[in-house]
Image (cartoon, rainbow, N blue to C red; front, side, top):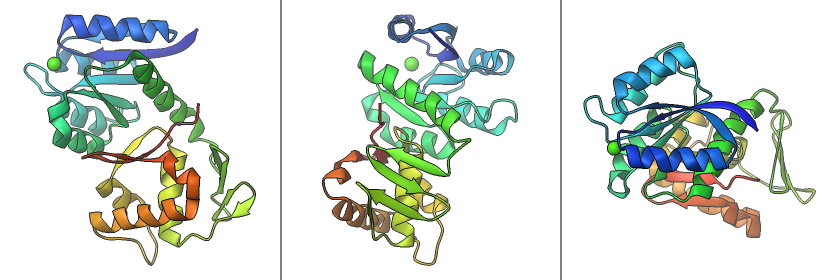
Length: 229
Ligand code: CA
């Protein structure tokens, strides 16, 4: 039984119920609920959940404002946030991710995908602490040596290709917007435009061969490495 506490901020009771069922089926039994942003912020502070599921379309304070407040406040900034959004809200999703949300799920959601995304976010937190070596789908990245090996073979990557792969693989399951990738990676040849990121990804996929399909294009949002369950 999972011990992690999850806070669910969603105004529609029916959707809250569906999400609760999906989380409980996945073993998450401590679930706090709020049907508006103000109460959600209060619960985030008082209960210190391990993860927050946050709807964007809320009455009163909207989800993006809640997200920003959570990420500004010292006591809540490290809690991972997964955004719940409708299909038409892609640009808001991008804003939410750039404010620091870890991932998003489009409604109507699939129960297994919801559970998988939640698990990936919770796992990222515990793995970030000892991250000299990242292993993902058979790829081994050593951050100290700046080396990436696939099936024992060293990959010939440029500095920025390595940094992008390292970023995505270090947080498998998490979506990054192009802008976030630009700010996170550094180096002499780091790309400065969103288009340049697309080019880097094309090159990376080519060098990675069949493994490259693990890098998913998230339409209208950015890129993610498939979680390795
Ligand atoms: Ca709503």
